[in-house]
Length: 433
Ligand code: LLP
Image: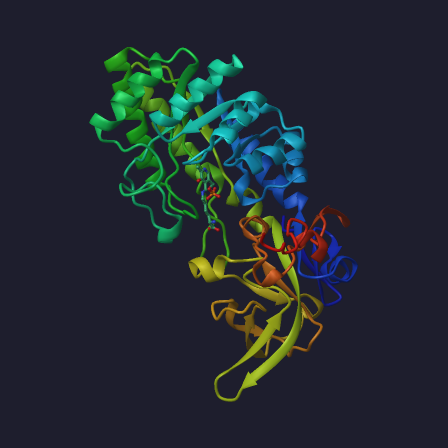
């Protein structure tokens, strides 16, 4: 069921009038539908968690990491993937249980690793042996142990924007498959007493709508499970197949149901383990975008409208690349609507521009809209993932507020940043001595 409805020419989101939300909280504003998130988490419960034994879902919180979101993820019985001390700190503040946190990232600092070990993070996914050795030293000092997974580079090229491909041979992520590089690291990790070498991890890329590349990467991981068993008589207990499941931004994009990816992945895994006499490892996935992207919208107020005769009309909003960098960074496409003219005929075409001093700050090109006026509320759909989490203070624009809505109710989960907060770490100039 869609959380998007239109009443009295206004767009409603999960039962809330978006025009009223814009008035109440101001713009730019991110609005997130709890029911839309729950549709995804329930689908994961039904088609994955309840269907198979020893499987886990860790929400990749880089897509949208706030205290309230961590609480929601905990309440829905999912694990959490973090990639920095900041994301981990947010999860800790939310009271997220450490054993259900997975820590990814290709260059974790000493302080970040210490924080993770001290908090008892359930899995640390490492990018190589030097990180494992640093981790072992911390564990010795804190008298703890750590469960690790090695992130491998499965050498799979995926069909997505180059900037969000991560599993190809030439990648900054993961340990290469080259046996002379990979196996000595695995052997050394197995031998470290503070380290519980638990499994293997891959993440091949993001915004994928075809399951074939996940399957190809899973084959690579499974053959390593077999080879590690043969070489060291060592049983891999867990495989993490990453995230990457795509969503619908514009017509033509496909958001496949989770089962489209997970059913064949589980079938392949079980068949392979059966054939090779292996214990089927725990299977973990790390969806980020697919859990929150479509639940979120952004609201902006239209300001200056400029028509270049014979060329195009620009309508400027009170935000842009600072709250959604994806068009500028990945040429990402979005759809939009005028919230207070939601049912009106779209007789005009405008280009929605941001207010940042950058030519790339264009949100949508030549979008069909009804006749516009300053003060209209503009909605961008599918901004729940990698919108707020990639927001910046460029041009010293404050980070917008985030509101969670459900069944006609709204609650503020991130307050708008104030000018004072924006400069709170700045210091006045001192005279040189
Ligand atoms: N696991 C790992 C190790 C990852 O690196 C990522 C995403 C995920 C899981 C979640 O992937 P998802 O399910 O969200 O596709 N800023 C970019 C996306 C970068 C994704 C990086 N890693 C964007 O806005 O498109």
